[in-house]
Figure 1 (tube, rainbow, N blue to C red):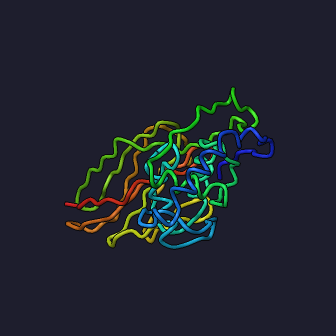
Figure 2 (figure 1 turned 45 degrees about the vertical axis):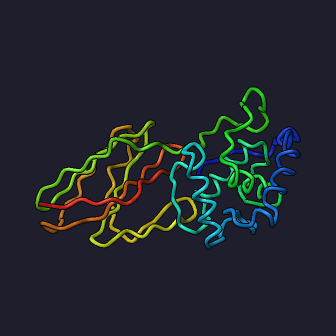
Figure 3 (figure 1 turned 30 degrees about the vertical axis):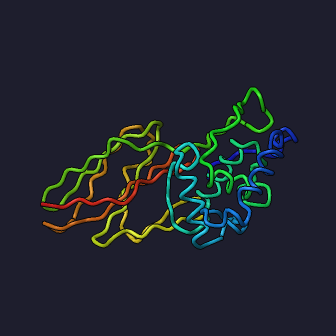
Length: 234
Protein backbone atom coordinates (compact mmCIF):
# COMPACT_ATOMS: atom_id res chain seq x y z
CA UNK A 1 0.00 0.00 0.00
CA UNK A 2 1.48 3.33 -0.99
CA UNK A 3 1.79 5.71 1.93
CA UNK A 4 1.30 9.48 1.94
CA UNK A 5 1.11 11.50 5.13
CA UNK A 6 -1.75 13.99 4.81
CA UNK A 7 -1.75 15.08 8.42
CA UNK A 8 -0.08 18.39 7.46
CA UNK A 9 -2.65 19.43 4.83
CA UNK A 10 -3.46 23.09 5.46
CA UNK A 11 -6.27 25.38 4.44
CA UNK A 12 -4.28 26.14 1.28
CA UNK A 13 -5.83 23.09 -0.36
CA UNK A 14 -9.14 24.94 -0.44
CA UNK A 15 -7.81 27.87 -2.47
CA UNK A 16 -9.83 28.25 -5.65
CA UNK A 17 -12.36 25.59 -4.66
CA UNK A 18 -15.28 27.95 -4.05
CA UNK A 19 -15.73 29.05 -7.66
CA UNK A 20 -15.23 25.54 -9.00
CA UNK A 21 -17.72 24.05 -6.58
CA UNK A 22 -20.32 26.74 -7.27
CA UNK A 23 -19.99 26.23 -11.03
CA UNK A 24 -20.12 22.47 -10.56
CA UNK A 25 -23.33 22.65 -8.54
CA UNK A 26 -24.96 24.67 -11.31
CA UNK A 27 -23.80 22.32 -14.06
CA UNK A 28 -24.91 19.25 -12.11
CA UNK A 29 -28.36 20.71 -11.48
CA UNK A 30 -31.56 19.04 -12.83
CA UNK A 31 -31.21 20.98 -16.09
CA UNK A 32 -28.14 18.81 -16.82
CA UNK A 33 -29.74 15.56 -15.70
CA UNK A 34 -28.95 13.86 -18.99
CA UNK A 35 -25.21 14.18 -18.36
CA UNK A 36 -23.30 11.22 -16.93
CA UNK A 37 -22.86 12.53 -13.40
CA UNK A 38 -22.58 10.88 -9.98
CA UNK A 39 -25.37 11.38 -7.46
CA UNK A 40 -24.01 9.49 -4.43
CA UNK A 41 -21.03 9.87 -2.16
CA UNK A 42 -18.59 7.00 -2.74
CA UNK A 43 -15.87 5.40 -0.63
CA UNK A 44 -13.99 2.13 -0.13
CA UNK A 45 -16.54 -0.68 -0.23
CA UNK A 46 -19.00 1.11 -2.54
CA UNK A 47 -20.23 -0.86 -5.55
CA UNK A 48 -22.33 -0.25 -8.64
CA UNK A 49 -22.65 1.73 -11.83
CA UNK A 50 -21.67 5.04 -10.25
CA UNK A 51 -18.36 3.54 -9.13
CA UNK A 52 -17.86 2.40 -12.74
CA UNK A 53 -18.61 5.95 -13.92
CA UNK A 54 -16.05 7.31 -11.45
CA UNK A 55 -13.40 4.76 -12.51
CA UNK A 56 -14.01 5.41 -16.22
CA UNK A 57 -13.61 9.15 -15.61
CA UNK A 58 -10.39 8.78 -13.59
CA UNK A 59 -8.93 6.31 -16.12
CA UNK A 60 -8.85 9.10 -18.72
CA UNK A 61 -5.59 10.25 -17.13
CA UNK A 62 -2.90 7.65 -16.41
CA UNK A 63 -1.30 10.04 -13.89
CA UNK A 64 -4.45 9.80 -11.77
CA UNK A 65 -5.40 6.15 -12.26
CA UNK A 66 -2.60 4.23 -14.02
CA UNK A 67 -4.31 0.87 -13.53
CA UNK A 68 -7.43 2.04 -15.38
CA UNK A 69 -9.59 -0.77 -13.98
CA UNK A 70 -13.35 -0.35 -14.30
CA UNK A 71 -14.65 -2.98 -11.89
CA UNK A 72 -17.67 -1.30 -10.28
CA UNK A 73 -16.00 -1.82 -6.89
CA UNK A 74 -14.36 1.03 -4.94
CA UNK A 75 -11.18 -0.53 -3.55
CA UNK A 76 -7.72 0.68 -2.65
CA UNK A 77 -6.63 1.48 -6.21
CA UNK A 78 -9.70 3.63 -6.76
CA UNK A 79 -9.09 5.32 -3.41
CA UNK A 80 -5.54 6.20 -4.50
CA UNK A 81 -6.86 7.56 -7.81
CA UNK A 82 -9.40 9.74 -5.97
CA UNK A 83 -6.61 11.02 -3.70
CA UNK A 84 -4.55 11.93 -6.80
CA UNK A 85 -7.57 13.76 -8.23
CA UNK A 86 -8.09 15.63 -4.97
CA UNK A 87 -4.45 16.70 -4.82
CA UNK A 88 -4.62 17.97 -8.39
CA UNK A 89 -7.74 20.00 -7.66
CA UNK A 90 -6.55 21.39 -4.32
CA UNK A 91 -9.04 19.40 -2.27
CA UNK A 92 -8.36 17.55 1.00
CA UNK A 93 -6.88 14.22 -0.11
CA UNK A 94 -9.13 11.93 1.92
CA UNK A 95 -9.60 9.24 -0.73
CA UNK A 96 -13.40 9.29 -0.79
CA UNK A 97 -15.92 11.14 -2.95
CA UNK A 98 -17.64 13.29 -0.35
CA UNK A 99 -19.65 16.53 -0.44
CA UNK A 100 -16.65 18.66 -1.48
CA UNK A 101 -15.24 16.36 -4.14
CA UNK A 102 -18.53 15.25 -5.70
CA UNK A 103 -19.47 18.58 -7.37
CA UNK A 104 -15.95 19.04 -8.74
CA UNK A 105 -15.99 15.56 -10.30
CA UNK A 106 -19.45 16.17 -11.73
CA UNK A 107 -18.36 19.49 -13.20
CA UNK A 108 -15.45 17.80 -14.93
CA UNK A 109 -17.60 14.85 -16.05
CA UNK A 110 -19.78 17.36 -17.91
CA UNK A 111 -17.09 19.77 -19.09
CA UNK A 112 -13.97 17.65 -19.44
CA UNK A 113 -11.04 16.68 -17.24
CA UNK A 114 -9.40 19.60 -15.45
CA UNK A 115 -5.62 19.28 -15.62
CA UNK A 116 -4.76 20.98 -12.35
CA UNK A 117 -3.91 24.34 -10.80
CA UNK A 118 -0.15 24.11 -11.02
CA UNK A 119 0.32 22.66 -7.57
CA UNK A 120 3.85 21.57 -6.75
CA UNK A 121 5.90 20.47 -3.79
CA UNK A 122 7.44 23.96 -3.69
CA UNK A 123 4.12 25.79 -3.76
CA UNK A 124 2.27 23.51 -1.34
CA UNK A 125 4.93 21.66 0.68
CA UNK A 126 2.46 20.71 3.41
CA UNK A 127 0.64 18.29 1.11
CA UNK A 128 3.66 16.27 0.00
CA UNK A 129 6.03 14.02 1.89
CA UNK A 130 8.14 12.89 -1.05
CA UNK A 131 6.55 9.44 -0.96
CA UNK A 132 6.13 7.54 -4.23
CA UNK A 133 2.41 7.50 -5.04
CA UNK A 134 2.64 6.52 -8.71
CA UNK A 135 2.34 2.97 -10.03
CA UNK A 136 4.82 1.66 -12.60
CA UNK A 137 3.90 2.06 -16.27
CA UNK A 138 3.92 -1.23 -18.19
CA UNK A 139 5.06 -1.17 -21.83
CA UNK A 140 6.52 -3.28 -24.65
CA UNK A 141 4.52 -6.38 -23.78
CA UNK A 142 5.45 -9.41 -25.90
CA UNK A 143 4.52 -13.10 -25.80
CA UNK A 144 6.31 -16.02 -27.46
CA UNK A 145 4.87 -19.55 -27.33
CA UNK A 146 5.50 -23.19 -28.19
CA UNK A 147 3.29 -26.20 -27.51
CA UNK A 148 3.47 -26.04 -23.71
CA UNK A 149 5.30 -22.87 -22.66
CA UNK A 150 4.57 -19.16 -23.07
CA UNK A 151 7.17 -16.51 -22.27
CA UNK A 152 5.68 -13.13 -21.37
CA UNK A 153 8.02 -10.15 -21.30
CA UNK A 154 7.54 -6.43 -20.66
CA UNK A 155 9.19 -3.26 -19.41
CA UNK A 156 8.32 -0.79 -16.67
CA UNK A 157 9.39 2.82 -16.28
CA UNK A 158 10.69 2.07 -12.78
CA UNK A 159 12.07 -0.97 -10.99
CA UNK A 160 9.28 -3.40 -10.09
CA UNK A 161 8.45 -7.05 -9.57
CA UNK A 162 6.23 -8.96 -11.96
CA UNK A 163 3.44 -11.54 -11.89
CA UNK A 164 1.45 -13.05 -14.76
CA UNK A 165 -2.15 -14.18 -14.20
CA UNK A 166 -3.44 -16.70 -16.77
CA UNK A 167 -6.31 -19.10 -17.40
CA UNK A 168 -8.10 -20.86 -20.25
CA UNK A 169 -11.28 -18.97 -19.30
CA UNK A 170 -11.64 -15.16 -19.37
CA UNK A 171 -10.04 -13.47 -16.39
CA UNK A 172 -12.40 -11.81 -13.93
CA UNK A 173 -10.61 -9.05 -12.03
CA UNK A 174 -11.46 -7.96 -8.51
CA UNK A 175 -9.99 -4.85 -6.89
CA UNK A 176 -9.29 -5.58 -3.24
CA UNK A 177 -7.47 -3.79 -0.45
CA UNK A 178 -3.88 -3.25 -1.64
CA UNK A 179 -4.13 -5.45 -4.72
CA UNK A 180 -6.02 -6.83 -7.68
CA UNK A 181 -6.92 -10.50 -7.80
CA UNK A 182 -8.27 -12.71 -10.57
CA UNK A 183 -9.69 -16.17 -11.14
CA UNK A 184 -6.49 -17.25 -12.89
CA UNK A 185 -3.30 -19.06 -12.01
CA UNK A 186 -0.21 -16.97 -11.27
CA UNK A 187 3.51 -17.14 -12.04
CA UNK A 188 5.97 -14.66 -10.56
CA UNK A 189 9.37 -13.68 -11.92
CA UNK A 190 11.11 -13.40 -8.53
CA UNK A 191 11.34 -10.82 -5.78
CA UNK A 192 13.99 -8.70 -7.54
CA UNK A 193 13.03 -5.19 -8.63
CA UNK A 194 13.90 -4.49 -12.28
CA UNK A 195 12.64 -2.54 -15.29
CA UNK A 196 12.76 -5.51 -17.69
CA UNK A 197 10.69 -8.57 -16.83
CA UNK A 198 10.23 -12.02 -18.37
CA UNK A 199 8.00 -14.79 -17.04
CA UNK A 200 7.83 -18.36 -18.38
CA UNK A 201 4.44 -20.01 -18.00
CA UNK A 202 4.88 -23.78 -18.38
CA UNK A 203 2.65 -26.86 -18.39
CA UNK A 204 0.21 -25.36 -20.88
CA UNK A 205 -2.08 -27.27 -23.23
CA UNK A 206 -1.12 -27.25 -26.91
CA UNK A 207 -3.16 -25.30 -29.49
CA UNK A 208 -5.12 -23.55 -26.74
CA UNK A 209 -6.14 -19.93 -26.20
CA UNK A 210 -5.10 -18.53 -22.81
CA UNK A 211 -6.20 -15.29 -21.21
CA UNK A 212 -3.51 -13.40 -19.31
CA UNK A 213 -2.70 -10.13 -17.57
CA UNK A 214 0.45 -8.63 -16.10
CA UNK A 215 0.61 -7.42 -12.49
CA UNK A 216 3.57 -5.23 -11.54
CA UNK A 217 4.48 -3.73 -8.13
CA UNK A 218 7.12 -1.12 -7.36
CA UNK A 219 9.19 -0.77 -4.20
CA UNK A 220 6.55 1.46 -2.57
CA UNK A 221 3.78 -1.07 -3.13
CA UNK A 222 2.09 0.79 -5.99
CA UNK A 223 0.39 -1.69 -8.30
CA UNK A 224 -0.18 -1.56 -12.05
CA UNK A 225 -1.97 -4.17 -14.16
CA UNK A 226 -2.66 -4.60 -17.86
CA UNK A 227 -6.05 -5.25 -19.39
CA UNK A 228 -6.54 -9.01 -19.89
CA UNK A 229 -5.36 -10.19 -23.31
CA UNK A 230 -4.84 -13.56 -25.02
CA UNK A 231 -2.20 -15.79 -26.55
CA UNK A 232 -2.42 -19.20 -28.24
CA UNK A 233 0.01 -22.08 -27.78
CA UNK A 234 1.30 -23.99 -30.82
